[in-house]
Image (cartoon, rainbow, N blue to C red; front, side):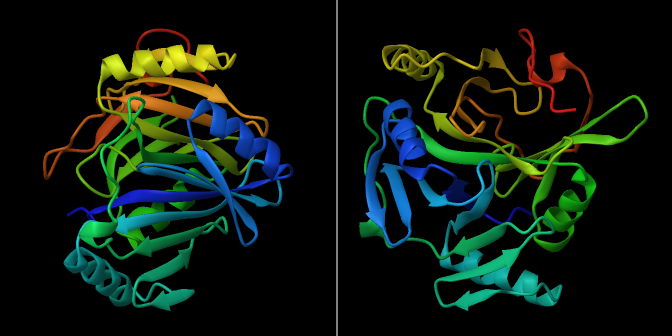
Length: 272
């Protein structure tokens, strides 16, 4: 059973927060404001926070429960598994994953606080991905301890795990983990309403003078169409469309470690 929560906010470290915030303000149509020690980059249904620190590292990912019952149910799930909470308040609780990332679960917003209709270039924050030399360790934590549901796994010729795609609701994945030589942030993705809107985002990137780093393509796991741009810290920002929606009890998929798995239409960025 899914947690029934959606990705709401990402907090990224950067050695140059001002420059990174400006990049995402331009490419992802975000408004920037100062908030304590972070630069908040925000639009309807997508929010990044940029904090001074080592470039290319995730500080925190926050998921918001779909309902108050889902929020209480997941906290009870963590309590039953004796998962240590490093923040435990009425509207949020936080855990720390094996690589030191903060993962926060937020109570649902009141109806009058929810975002309104998206603008012409709408796209909601939907998932993020991490790189790790030991992906199985992270997967065991997110699935075994936090209750994420596995959608698809990728294995190399030796049978070792090279990528995993996990979900927190019916959408194919809200978190992906890739095997790579170093532990770092990989990318975040914002889901556009449809294929035509993905085209409009590609035109927008061109209008800002930003080259596409990958795509337009189609992923195997998730079956979504996508484009990616690369920021100043080496992270990637993705716009995707028409991500697979998983039926309850969907069998876990297994894919071979090859470029066609990550991009059925052409070349792929292989992390390992």
